[in-house]
Length: 194
Image 1 (cartoon, rainbow, N blue to C red):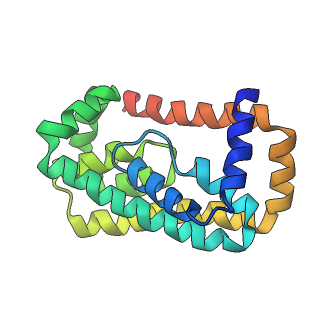
Image 2: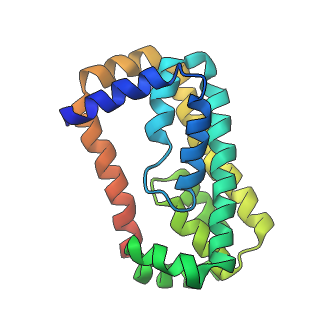
């Protein structure tokens, strides 16, 4: 995983750039509706590089992610046949989506909350929420709580233990990269099993 090291170093350097926050917002927005890479890839190095901005960055990631979630909801509600179905096919989520939709009647708010906090691909959840017509207020509250808890927990841990965590990342970058990749792949795998 040494090939990822330059990307990590570049992301740390990018954290000082005046437009870095906007890029974080763009990635967080896109990930909630169509982009496969989670914003944590940017958020974590940005907080490590600038721990004083930890909670601001978590707030930006949360707000942009929830806004992107609304776009995903719109894709599901209004554009499912045109954009949503091909997007699910691209990510191989059609079968999981059918099973997932059946659960929404009873568990929709909890699914959104869990999806916002866990490594499950949030875009599938936002689109499913729109397709199934989950109450938009319920969707928003669950998204804010789930995504906020995830990003603010990361911010709190990095703010509190940042120097130690940075030392551990620097020292164990390869194995930690493998773990992060496994979690990302695991999120997609869990959706296939549901």
